[in-house]
Length: 130
Image: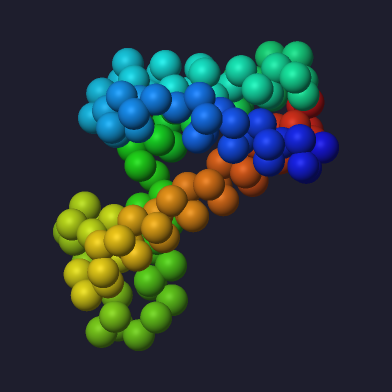
């Protein structure tokens, strides 16, 4: 089930996501809802559980709309020395990373964190309610 969940995630998040959805989902609700709904379609092959599908789709919409992974990236920096921590006020400036982190790397960290969060939630939803 883990491989199937990974494939459903990759299909929904990358194959079925249009440029419009990717560019606008953090700015407006409608693209986030459209993306979250289309994201959930491949999971219909894995489960027909309304609870599992609801958890997968709704959390995906919320996490993407608020780009929540940048807060996880920010929080992980709390584990480092005080001089390397990112100020809360600077979270938006470089995807939650320090301002000395190259922007491309900072964005990549958010993408990895985002996908990790989605995969964990999806696995839990499919395991508990799927």
